[in-house]
Each structure stands twice: as C-alpha cells, then as structure tokens.
Image 1: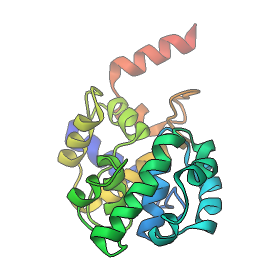
Image 2: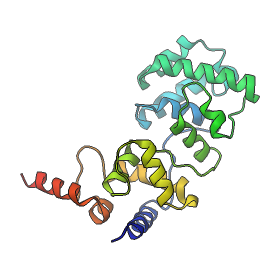
Image 3: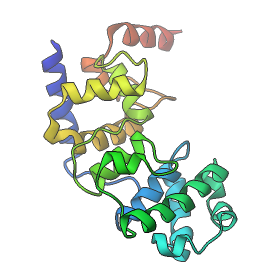
Image 4: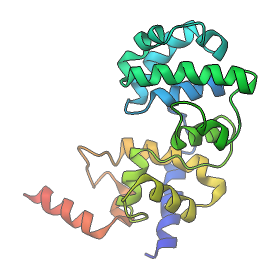
Length: 219
C-alpha cells in the first residue's frame, strides 16, 4: 500500500468510526475554550472538565477573571498542574483581551500566540474549534499515531504537524485532528496497546514497529 492509499485508508476508517465528533473540552464560547485548552497542558481533558465549571462559576469572561487575584485562580486550577504558570497566564491574557481586543478572543494565530501562556497548539485548537479555521493541532496522541502509521518520522510535533498538513486535505483538518485523538485514546494508547484492536496501525503501520510489538507479545 503506497502512502496515498494509506492516507485514504486512515481518512475512511476514522470517518466510519467517528461520523459525529465530540469536542473533548467542555466550553460555551471562544474565551472558555481558550482557558480550557490552556489548562489542558500536561493535564487530562477529564480533569480539566472537572475544574473548569468551578472556575467559570466565578469568572467565565475576561472582565470577571481580572477581578480575581492570581492566587485565587491558582487555588481553583491547582489539580490541573502547572498552576503558578497557568494562573498568571489566565489573568494576564484576560487583561490583554480587555485592553487590546475589547474583551473578545482574537481570530488570528498571530494575535492568539502573542497572549501569555498561549502557544501554537493552543492557538490552533481555538482557531479550529471556536472559529472553524483549518488547523491541525498536534497533541501526544496525534504525534504518536502519525509515527505508528508511518506518516511522520516522530522527531518533533512541529514536523508531525507539517506532515499532517501536507498529507491530509485542508478541508478535513478540523475533523481529522479530533478523530485521531479519539482513536488514539480508544484503540492505540501509549500504554496497554493491543495491536489486534488497532485496525489502522495493523493495516498501515510501520512494519518495524509492528514486528517489534509482535515479538514482545510472544515473550
């Protein structure tokens, strides 16, 4: 199977498995999505979805958020990890949204990435899920699966993103990045990986990886 056929198999199988695609982080607008994505760094989406209702009950917009102290924000978001950095980022970006963007989340990569604690991945998620702009945010699941499927070399997430954007049609990026995340969680996890359940990797995966896994499972 050549690369083009492998890419098409991935697209078709993911569409079959996930015809409707849930968004992993609970939110009601671009601002609450931005905060949820920021909190999700090195934290599970499940945990974030447990914490954001507590935070948003006090402040679900930048005007209310800046009325809280960094310390108050930190206490609420502590279970998400990295709370000193994240609380400063949330307070700081809320101030900038009020000062520079009339309290609205800007609709450009450049403006989003200029906000405190907002990197390229966070900006990509917001552009994609809040504004429908084609983007391909690469998380650990996508990075792992693109390597397992022999569609990227696995060296770094920037390269994985470039490869994904080059291989997959632009109009599918917003669906695909979410479908791959759900597939990674359900069928191709980092730990407790069962190749028999992982139909995509079994069909299009890196031969050396599959052989190694089969050897290990026979021991």
